[in-house]
Length: 291
Image (cartoon, rainbow, N blue to C red):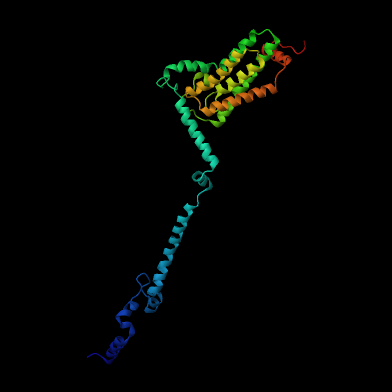
């Protein structure tokens, strides 16, 4: 027979609150804790369902806030992106003019290749463009200078030679800075490489033709038909490079303006006859400063 002590302990266990099914988990030790954890520790570590739900919901709020922050950040565009998406009237006008310039220049490049619509005239147009080449004019001016016997002629030719050198160097420098490509992909020829006429802006032939024509009109006495032919030649030299697909229309217009600027600059620093004779003497190694 069981002893009275065992009977009383069983009755106490049945009457205990912890023996109920809803409180059975309080008597079980923690799985991740130490083996000697008692009911008090498990009771202290246990949390109400409301607290657990509240704590589990807190970490989820942080990524939600960061996610909403990430969603708000793309709305703040950088300043340069805002300018591209909402350009000003000036930007729209410039882009429109550049698009028109490229479209018209491509349409006018009818002699760009032999297979183009005017490909049969390519050699004649190239010959016309050669008359405005810098190397052609520099060599021709030097030849005329060696054959000139008058002081007035030598004065004009020396100043023209310096103007041509200034034009070649200035155009080459601007082209190196801008580095604008032509309307058609073409490799520069030998003479263009020698004259450093590699890029499109500004048009070197148009600049040289405008400067030379204005120079000759100002310092030579020519009849009216010759003056008209000289102006027509300058215009045809500039347009020939557009027909060959080397330059845009804006390159040609800026080239004409740059040529007029070179002429004005040379007029302001015009070398006198004595200075020109000194330069000729130095170049021919016949100059003597003592005699």
